[in-house]
Length: 376
Image (cartoon, rainbow, N blue to C red):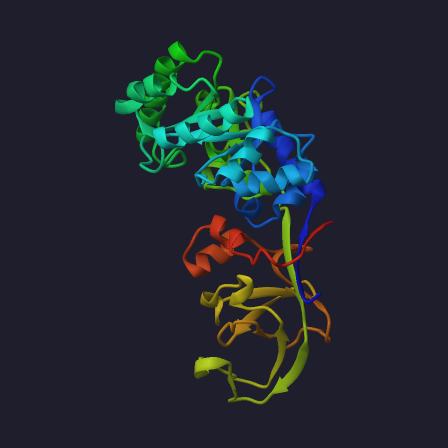
């Protein structure tokens, strides 16, 4: 095994516990494991947290069915889109997957299959409160509800929406909450006892008003903060001064496949983008942009070797990366940390995100899903 991901079970459970404490016992917790659990490994995470969470949230019906096949019995909500595939939806209804509802076409299709099965298809209505993605707008919700009430094999059990900028824009966020609460009022007249949910990780910490019946915790479950504000927030309103402390769950490792000495003035890698300015001890790593180690880390990235920071030199290749290990004791097959910590030194998703001009979400989610995920 040349490159792999270690997932800390202890830290995963700890972070989930922090979020549970922050929202309280009266609010349900949905752990979002969409997109391979933000790169952490969907089944690995779900198996660790299935006794600690109320729901799992996924992006697609395919992800939901994978969880069910793996004996994950928690309620599961498809948060995004599902193809109108009769066979898969039939399996989803049988497996008690909850679907998003925001178009008549979806509802008709679900109702037809559920009727044939002599079952109910469970749905949560998706409201677009201002993110302008999928969902019914408040202006059309009454018409949609009238249509929805005609389909007797569709059970409306929830209502949800999504914040556009809950970390940084309180005025816009307040407007979204106002729209969502209006949607709750309208929908509850026709469909009482709904599970209403809007909070992401950040809103769960920063906006207790938005907890409603359930919060959807994604990024913070994995020990990564969505913003500086969540780092500074108290763990609950009763613990002012005791800030949210999360523990990173993911460590990305590889190993050295060659160590070599280079004289001064030698070019390294494609494009001759780096030239040694002194005698240099270089190590070669079997990882590159095909694995999700971004090409923008060429000549700017840093890894940990023997607990010390070593610079990436030359361009990151498809399957190889070179590092300067001058002055660091190293040998072939030695472990190298691409993302994670060793002693007091740590390379964070935030640090890599700054270097490549993106967000921490993308750094972890883009790690190649084919790489092994190991529970440590």
